[in-house]
Amino acid sequence: MKLNASPGPDGFNVEFYLAAWDWIGEEVTQLVTTFYKTGILPPHINDTNIALIPKKLVPQVPMDYRPISLCNVVYKIIAKSLANRIKPHLPDYIDPAQQAFIEGRRISDNIIIAQEITHSFALKSWNHHAFMLKIDLAKAFDRLEWSFIVSALARKGLHGHFINLIHACISSPTFSVLINGQPSHKFKSFRGIHQGCPMSPYLFVIAINELSVALNEALAAHHLQGISLGPDCPSIHSLLFADDLLVCGQATMQEANSMAQLIHHFCYISGQTPNWAKSAILFSTHVSQTTIQEIKQVFPVSIMDNNFTHLGHPLILPAKNRTAAYNFVIDKFLNKLPAYKANMLSHAARLELIRSVFSAIPVYYMSNILFTKKFIAKLTAIIRNFWWTGIRENNSNKSLCLRAWKDICNSKQEGGLGIRNLQAINE
Image 1 (cartoon, rainbow, N blue to C red):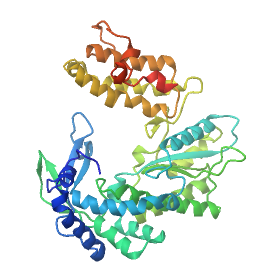
Image 2 (tube, helix red, strand yellow):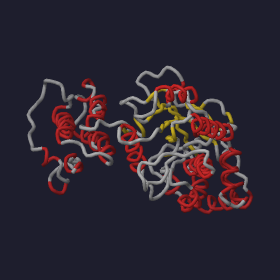
Image 3 (tube, one colour):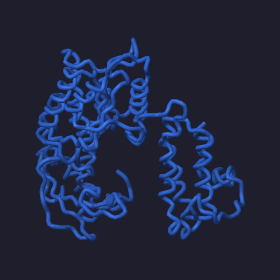
Image 4 (cartoon, rainbow, N blue to C red):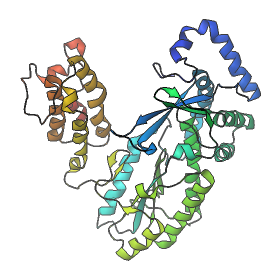
């Protein structure tokens, strides 16, 4: 478990358990062993505080906050032990279309395939009539029905007692919302899994995998065809990363209706609700406007534009200058450098901000695309000027750089500051 994490309602963090293990280790071990035998959690073990983190500068409605669950460490010990028993079997349980939380699978594969699909859609030489639908699931973790999780685990062949242990964990939490640091009155939930629980990611992908199972069955029964990007390529019907869903099919009313019925049935039994306002659809070049309008009646979504993103990456890339689609990365840099705050930071604070935030932002995107040297130079200039002056890149009050930037990027053992060299990473 991570150190320096916020404690749960009991106030004891991981560091306390490590420091006091010689005194409390036997009691904690006995508690976990008893739970494994009886399947009953002691009272208040699964009490959970909910901290609300603003997603906007000026939050006004509940949707503007991101809820973070703070569980008791002793509960995390139990949940982590169960999660560690599930984790090794996930590659066998989960369809290859799902890339999240599974060892050996990478988010970059999902992004690259999605971008290749949109690239094929734009080619006039790709003589197929197809669509790709991006579905946003509203509050996916919070809406998941416990009965659906139990049935999904049972279909994987897990032992009944093990499933009962998991059900005891996910159905027993009592929540309190932290308001100005003080917990509100307690309340219980009747569905959903809280994201502070170590089991939640694995239980979610097992549950959402039921959609992949249904799609595979529909493909085998020829109710769906999916799409294929080449003569020897397998048929693709979906790309999943946790609750980010992309589904593909032939642009016909029959396939669209079959897909809609399948998605509706899955959402009905699992408790999920598509947020059609945040979802979008893309059609290949040869699909007629009449067909587009008919399918849009089935899926009440907008058409993807050039600004639409999937897992943070633009889906539609310009043919000649792919880097141009990533200009928003520069805006991300500038938005994190308001001049009235940045120039008040010491050099030590600036260094920490550069190493933990600014150097990390472009690295995620570099895993999928090779940026132009001009683009990297722009990002480097923002970081460099922030380091020396504490101001935004477009501010006119620039000062003299006292050392070459390549020297600053050297490791501390070599006399530098250990800042990542973006140009070297990009190569």
